Every structure is written in structure tokens, then in C-alpha cells.
Image (cartoon, rainbow, N blue to C red):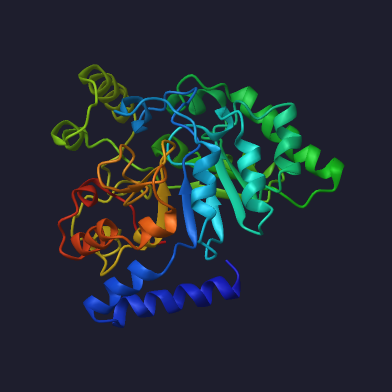
Amino acid sequence: MSFIHRLKDLVRKSLYATLPGPLLVGYVRWRLPRVLNLESTTACNLACALCPTHMLGRSTRFLKDEHVGQILKGNNALRSVCFHVMGDPLIHPDLFDHVREFSSRGIETHFGTNGMRMAGKSVDEMIDSGLTSVSIALDGANAEDYVRYRRRGDFDTVVANTRALIERKKERGAASPLVQLQTIMFSYNEDNEENVKEFLASFDADEVTLKRPSYFNDYDAWKSAETDVEPIKISRTVEYGAEFLETVDHQDASRRYVRPRDDSDKTLLRNQRMCPQLEKATVLCDGRVTACCMDVDGRVVLGSLETETLAEIWRGKKRAKAIQDFRDRKMELCRVCDQRLE
């Protein structure tokens, strides 16, 4: 993180800590979003064990060009866009057209991918589009560990595609996209951490991240929520999750990469005076704007890009209520969130 980013983060945290409640709510409401989570599609070619993609109540869709226009209209504050909430962005046929739309305006662009479709033409498209960075999920130093979590994935394909991207960047003398390799650390990876680090280092990527798992598998919350999730989707995902969790020490307090079990944990976002996620806009691929990137099925909808611009939605009454609901600890989404302060 640069000095400027650290300074801005310090200022934001100071405001969070010192502003009286009403002023804090007003500040967060009227400040247009600098960061946007923009979902390209809900489609995904894998079936990862703890991912809620498999039981979304909404149908598979693709972000439309018109939605991009509604995001940009009247919103000069935007500085960074990540093309991901659910699904894999590389499945969207016009992904790089959307990337160019933002990057041509000096807005940083990012996305995460499982790397399975990152071959051939996509490599040059990533470079030519002006994409700022790409995060590739490579969860393990060998095929056996990788496939335990990345169901339907192919370790050798992801490794080959990743090396091809890095080599192509060197051939063209391209500075971007920055390539980040990301490994989710479960107990079997933690026990083999040094080998994982050595393996990831062999790619000569720009950045390597060992990530804490997000145990997004509180299925009781999904069952009780007013969503149209098919029971078979929930039962299938519960089965996937349960099978996987039997193989990892996800509740062992001696492990570093475990889910926080104490609801009073002061580092949890839901226990802050204000959640930083409420300052980041989240747009689903059907154009609905939701309260948070954890709202993957659109339970708290603030508005739709079909009828309003993002700037209009951002300063609207529904978003103001969502912010106040967080302050009053009435936000249902927060009960299943395990995200912590960085």
C-alpha cells in the first residue's frame, strides 16, 4: 500500500472513530463511491465447496453495456472497479470491453478468476484492455490439494495459463496487469505452508497472497431469508460444504486460518462503528445495487441501474436506511459475515 493510500486510510479510520453518529451516517451517505464491486456474471465453471454461487436464487445473467453507462453518469469520484461478486468474470463475452470503458477514464480495473479460461486470446486481451491487476486462485502446491476445494478445476491448466500470462507480459514488455497469485489456506495448506510459498514464488508473479477462508456456509440464514432459492440447491451446497469441512480443522483455535468464532471479536466488520464495505458500491449483474458485497442474492436492494444512475441510488433514502440499520445493529446480512479489518 502506497503512502497516499495509507494516509487516506488513516484519515477515514479517524473519522469513523471520532465523528458523532448522525454526522458519520451523513458523511458515508453523501460521499460518492470510490470503489465498486461490479459483478460481470453469476456463471461459474467450478463448484467450490464453500462458495454460495451454487445456490443463488437469481438466474444466470451477464452485465449489460447500459449498466456501465449508468455507473459512470454523474459519478466522477470512482477510482477502482473490481469485476467480481459471484461467478467468474472471464465467462462474460464482453468483459474486456467493459474493462476498457473504465480504464480509458483512468479508473483502476481488477478482477479475480479461477484461471481455467485464461488462455490464448484472453491473455493479450487482458494486456490490451488496460486491466490494472488480476488475481488468480491457485489453492495448493499440487493437484491433490488444489482439487480438494476447487471442484471441477484442473491444476495443470491453471498453472499453464498463469505461466503463459506472466511470460506474455514479459515478451511484450507490459507493466500491467499486475498478476497476483492467491491461495486460500486451509489446514492441509497450512501444514505445507513453506512448500506453498516456494511453489508460488516460482511463477515470478507481482504479488502472492495467502488468504484466510471465508466460511460463507451459514445455510440456516439462507433458509430463513425471503429468497427464491430452490431447496435442492441449498441441500446440494450443504452437502458439498459438510463433506469439505470434515477434511479441515476449521474450528481448531491453534490454527491461524480459521473462522472467528467469538461474535464479540473487535476486528469483525460487523462490530465497527461503521463498516468500510458500506462505502464501496456493489452492483449485481442484473443492475441491482445492493448494500454490501456479502449480499450475493440481493436481499437489501438500494435501487436498480435500469431506472437510476449509481449516483442517484447512492444518495437515496434506501441507502440511508441501510447505513442506519448497520449503526442500529439491525442488518441481517451482518449476522453471517465473518470479514475482519485488514
